[in-house]
Each structure stands twice: as structure tokens, then as C-alpha cells.
Amino acid sequence: QVQLVESGGGLVQAGGSLRLSCAASGRTFSYYMGWFRQAPGKDREFVASITNSGGTTDYADSVKGRFTISRDNAKNTVYLQMNSLKPEDTAVYYCNWLRGWGSRDPTVSWGQGTQVTVSS
Image (cartoon, rainbow, N blue to C red; front, top):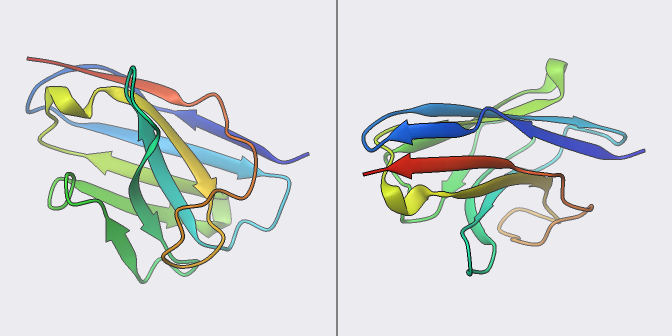
């Protein structure tokens, strides 16, 4: 059974940091993975992606220089380090495998996500 479990969200003041984790199981982990987020009343949007080796990453312009995606293939886990958080980063964050490099299409059903709330 394929499963994605996101964790690490919470309430933080603007300028603060959080580290999100995504534990994946049920299929080959070593493939492109991405983080996405969905704010209230908005569509889900791409945040960051990483290749299977972790050697190449890509970010949405809105988070470049503030967020860092990484992965530990031995632990089947992908991370999102979020620094200098802004109120506009408030959203539910999700991870998923991607269909290819540069793709924004998920490959499996979404997990429950983890809520990030940034207060001003």
C-alpha cells in the first residue's frame, strides 16, 4: 500500500523556521519527489522538487533562497527546511512522487498533509 505521511508543521512567527518531513512507503522511493502546498481558497501549488540522487533541486520563485529540499533514501524520507517564513507561506504542505523531472504532476494519492501557519 502506497503511503505518504507528512509531519513537522506547526505555528511559527514570521521570520521563524520549520522542518517538514515526508515518510514514503509502498513503492520505490528513489525517484523524483516534490513538495506542494495549498492555502485556503487556493489551488495546490508546486513548492520544490528533488531528483532521485538529491543532486538537483528546483524551487518555486516564491520560496527560492528560503526553503531547501533534501532527501534520505535510506530512510525513504524527503525533507523541506523552511527559513525566513512569511505569513503567505501559511498552507497545508504535501509531498508526492513526480512523473518526471520538471513535471508538477503527482503520481499517487495525496497524504493528509501537514499544516503550517505563520503569524505576522
